[in-house]
Length: 428
Ligand code: MN
Image (cartoon, rainbow, N blue to C red; front, side):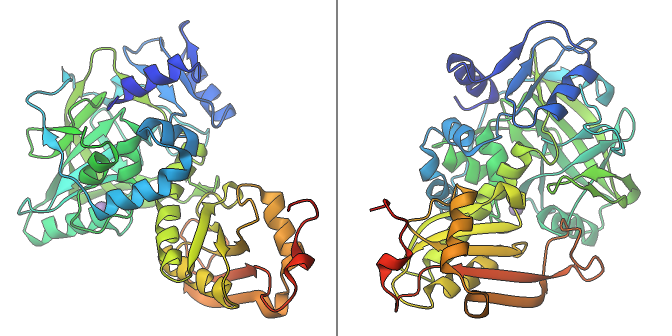
């Protein structure tokens, strides 16, 4: 079950995927995806294309856990273990895909929302290497179709950006890349993880998959999963920029138009009956893939600061990115505030965080609000951090400096007062 097809078959067996077998126009498929965020579906027959469209497969922690073959409660531990102990994948003798015409108009790419700057690919991983080949990075980037062979790629100043700068410093005018679409959720989750520069996210994915990942090397020496539904060989121009955007980001609001690098596609490969993964921007798949690895990271950081962490959530209302709730077994007054400081340090985009006692179910927003209502005093239990580095995704942050005000809510019971006073009647 190491590829997307295997996982889709598993979902079919469970009756957990909606199958559209009748022919649909590409616009109808995208309208369904936009109107039904979180729906797990496959369109078997998209008029005018020889590819299917799948959507929603990474849209909940339960789906991701099922794909990896663990319980949802074990996700954070598995991710932290994979980032601590990445495992270099094996190389496949041959790829499961074969060469197709290099023409992006043959792929079922469309606008997700009417005001999108163009048709967007939002589920693709991009792999690239340092000039000496010693460092590989794999990350997810949105790419807007410019024409049959060119895309505009959004690159924030992280690892791929750094590889571009290294290529530029070595005198290159472009960075060779491998692009893959239609992947097992483990690969997408690993590509979203904050593994340090120098660690290939393929090795993180391979650990998550219990050593089951195999890679194929493309003609330009970049690597893609050998069983990717679609693979592309190309390069990022270090000279040519185009307008990229508008595009709906994680917050569900439109991100602005920016000058971004151009990707040129040289070769396209497809599996027979290839499946294109349409991932709704601002939808549940986007939120879970972004949020889960940072939940794991927050959990590890808080566990180093207070004796016992029960659970961590980046909540859906906070776009699985800006708001965290953390439950702890409090042992001393001050544990709550130390937990908050650790969480802010672990996830720089975090804006508001709430820490609660372990009797609170943090997957229930009403229970968390109840803890704030009955265990929190604003003058004593609130931490305010002004002028901290925030998220570029938050429209209310200072858009020039990208600084923000962070609030930490310590909604744990004070140790000095009788415990009984703070327990919900009937909760034991
Ligand atoms: Mn990386």
